[in-house]
Image: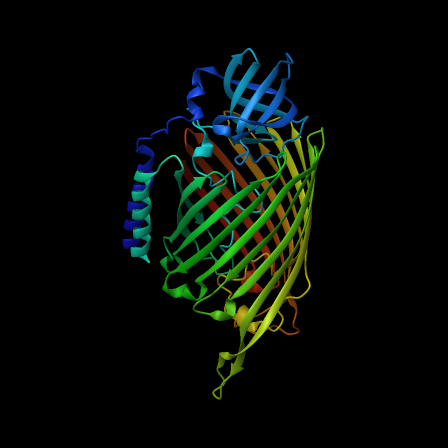
Length: 153
Length: 368
């Protein structure tokens, strides 16, 4: 009985976290991400490269050619450490992200990438970068890691 | 146990209020029903809740973390446990998308009173290298080390070394071929000898111990194929070979039937075949279906009767396991919801391990 009560209390406490107000740190890239400009683009990866971006971080950039109209998009994915996809040039992917048109071309700040039946998220619904959040599933657990599962026989 | 659990949760919830830009936390709650918690013919069912939390402090390429898990069994509270893992991760960028990864940590696992023989602590280390040999060829290699110190039953103590190498070849047709091979070396430094006293009772003599080594080799071939962006198919064949098993390891075998080593990857050899599909039918809902077929041989572990006596003529335990799993997940804002089901159908020459198991689980994962 006691364990049931304890479990119930733990459950309520855990669930209550969802209702906590969330504060965003300042000077992060999320403010450039506009939720009213979210589009989905399916296309072929022409090139995978890195580029120094926000706060001199090394970002993964995909040059994508859209499937139908063959428009070129520059996809800003995430910092290098967070990126955990084994993509190659020529892969067909679907990118959902915030569209920015500039003189340099069309930029898409990736919110998620869909590839071979899997969705890889990089930003939350509001455009907040997940690399500033939990690392449980992605980021540094990219080798044999998966900290969560190991050693618990 | 309960006090410690409450303390961990309270501490964790308190830390939520002081998080900053480089300080973040994650919470996961997973509940599941299983028809067979011990994966044997006793078929003891239970409802289990797992509360997981992690705290990370990240600065540049270094991440310092503290993970904590609590496992709560509704019908079998003796099996409740909690674990804590502090550690540090480091990434060293190399040219291009290549990097070196290092993870050092320490693990503590504590069961309730009845299972305290299985409590352990110990350090572990992982070093991994991800290196693109060409635009379509990826090499992953690494070394894992683990040491376990079983404070209440030192015969279980071991060190495990694993070396692995993996090659991935990507094709424009969205086909990926992966070959992975690894060597494991497990060393039990002091396994108590089994002796009989003058009344005929068997006892474990900690004064006279043996050391045991269990070297193991594995190799796997995986082929995956993408169909468009919403469908992925994969098939994998794995071979495991133990150069030596648990021969003369009765102290380990006799004491480990409940938890360990029933499902330890280093103590069986044989073949495993897996095939599966991942797809996104609509509305960014992810669905995965998987089937695995195992032929497992347990070197050095003999078939026993219900009394735990080796059945003559002595033969090693052989299992055929079929496993079906299905999962569906959906992300809402910062919350992941998921439902998983697993069905295991294990046929064994050892009656005790002839079992079926059904697990249904649902979970919620929250990101800050």
